[in-house]
Image 1: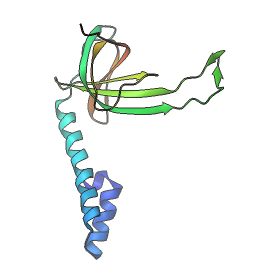
Image 2: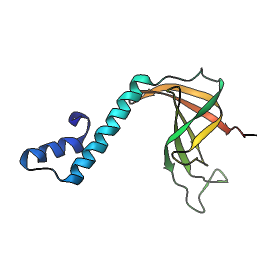
Image 3: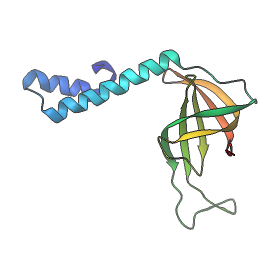
Image 4: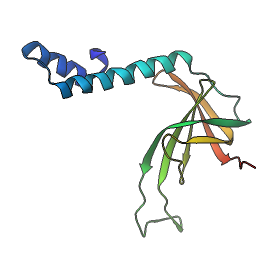
Amino acid sequence: YADRSEFLADLLGKYRIRELSEKQIEAVDRVVARFVEHDKLAETSQFLGNDGERVPVAGVVKLVRCIHQAYPGDWINGRPDQSRFLVKVETAAGCVVVWFTANPPKEGATVNGKATIKAREAYKGINQTTVKNFREVKSK
């Protein structure tokens, strides 16, 4: 995986000069594990439904990232500006679902709801479905 990671390439260059420390070896293991997980997901990922269709979305939140941080007093078009988050969910069926929200769930949480499909596209080799208007289904 050295050709896919500057970090690994750098460590392998250092390894040729001297032994790697235990922490460096643990770091290599973490990077390689991420590549293995990514490659597995790239092989098995599927798209979910068709554009404009309202579909159930149930899975585990794998990623929550703030893509825009609002600051107190920021206003856009007469409305208060809000922080936006990217949420990525992996379903049991091998689908990767992405949406943007101001109120994200926590990483590792299980979500169960419905959303409208906005787009279906590959990102870094992984098929993912972008949805909008995700609404959590209330359990009885």
